[in-house]
Image 1 (cartoon, rainbow, N blue to C red):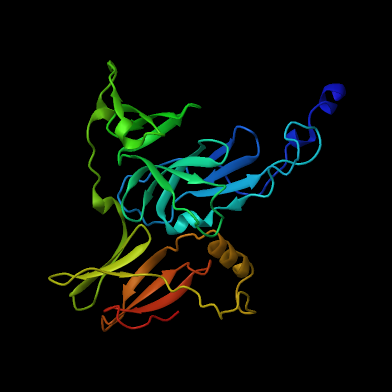
Image 2: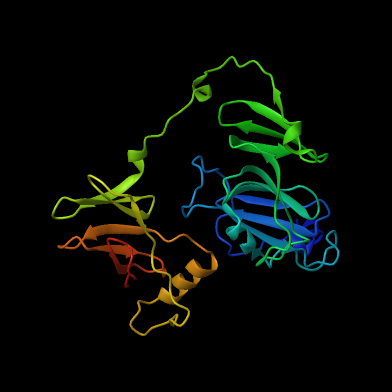
Amino acid sequence: NQEKKSDMPIAMHPKKLNLGPATAFEVNVDGTLALFGRNTQATRPWRKYGGGASGDVWIAKNSCPNPQGKDGKTYTDFKRVDALDDFFTFVSQPKWLDNSAMVFLAESKQGERGLWSFSVADNAQNELSRQPTLLVKDASIQSYSIEPSGKCTYASRCGQLYTADLKKGSDSIQQVAFKWTGPRKQLEQRYVTAEHYVQDWDIDPAGRFMTTIVRGEVNSFGLWDGPALKYAPIKPRKEEKEENSEDPMGSALCAKIMRESNAQARSRFARFTYDAERLVIVSDQTGEDDIEVHWEDNRRMPKR
């Protein structure tokens, strides 16, 4: 009724934040900070993942001086933690460890995978003043939960359960023995066929080289010899204007979203030219589909 509705704090009234679909949301113990995750629901099973599906973590401070009061707003000014992009290949399942530090499942660019901690009080959004700390090193972690005491329980991709004390690190890992009476299909090792991820391919007119597109990345290699080469999309130059009268409507907005979200560009429709010296690729690096021309030997500058 109206009387009960008036007793509800203003901070609890629903308000759209326009941050996109959420896969994680959690408030710390004292209610001063909140984390918001996008695309953080799943882990990447392959090592040194470099695709465009890495999770984003956003943090907001409580704008209400009294979190328990009835006046003021709460968590509306979310800012993305850009500092994690330079350190990790993927981030998933963020949770609060205490009032100023959060834990997440991630893999560093050096290949160390496990549970990491990141102190919000010591690090800004755009730079790292202190590197994240690896709490539990285990490449098979699939999901986990944290108790207020700092004890962690996690499940591995091999169907096993483990416990660990985050304060003591990897030395405290212990396997939990249990009896499973149901189907054992998930306990078996599974091997993924690489050809399932090939999206497109092309062979040059002379039949010497082949190009493939795997998870949005273009590679080429000789059919009989030679190494495989990777063709990265062309990044916009700083002097390039964001808006152009000839661009389609909404191009500037798409470019801004790609730039601010640090999204991974994807390529498609890679084709050899008649002389097999160049590759014509369609890329969405700028937020719109652009045609790029790359040299097959990857030694000269490409053009858009």
